[in-house]
Amino acid sequence: MENEIPKNLQRDISLISSLPCDINFHGTKLFKYQGCWYDNKTLQGILNLQRGFEPQETDIIVASFPKSGTTWLKALTVALLERSKHSSNHPLLSDNPHGLVPVLELRLYTETSKPDLTNFSSSPRLFSTHVPFHTLQEALKNSSCKVVYLWRNVKDALVSLWYFDCANLKIEEERSMLLLESMFESFCKGVSYYGPFWEHVLSYRRGSLEDPEHVLFLRYEELKTEPFVQLKKLAEFLGCPFTVEEEERGSVEEILDLCSLRNLKNLEVNKTGKTARGVDHKNFFRKGEVGDFKNYLTPEMEKKIDMIIEEKFRGTDLKL
Ligand code: A3P
Image (cartoon, rainbow, N blue to C red):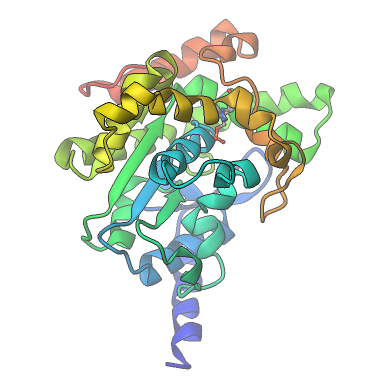
């Protein structure tokens, strides 16, 4: 047993060194594993997760491509599961959604394949991930956990990521447009952190069509236009539908209000706090608008990425 960790580590190091690699717009080396790109640390977390995660049938995994509305989905899921338990001391009032629902490969499994999960003793356990579905499936080992995937228009996700990087890395305005251009090229090439974007979305779309009972496929834009319908869909999927009494009492609206961008953004914990990885909570909340990319991408950029996505989504039921 004592030798097991170094042996696994050795195996991982030799696996990682055998993978295709490339450099992203930050100059960070990325490795291609199971069709998507990761930095060394994230990849080690994924390998640990695939080896060590012991799923429980009742686990819920919230999944997304970064900057697709993960924070919102986490908040909504927590609020759904916690409803009726809290009045004034709701967990969302004192912690950021990312503190309540950690990313498996980025927080729990980065250092080890056997993290201490005793804090997650209550059922269902709620985790999140950014890995594509086929990679997650290996970690889930045929268990019947429920997976909720949220995706978003690639151009808004890209602009959101750009804003997030500029804010975290404190990049001044003059350099920020250069960064957007290089991020754009990386996105189009598919060599971006957790990308290619289309592989990610398509993996979960296939998963949801094959097993709709266990994989729910949601869209950010639909959550924005019909939040009531989508939240009820999520509640039903998770096995905790709203009762008629709850609906009459306004529980659906209450959860939507609690989890609204406006409300979460203005909570003290989200104005001043930081995540375990040192990211300011406030950076997770920006505009939350559909089509904001128009303010940043040129018409040429828009056309180029639209053509790529159209080609990748051809033959599927997915629209830009
Ligand atoms: P914008 O940068 O377009 O505003 P993620 O949570 O995956 O990191 O994605 C961040 C994006 O979701 C940001 O988009 C952010 O503003 C938006 N967002 C965060 N909380 C939200 C909420 N409660 N409702 C709607 N959008 C939200």
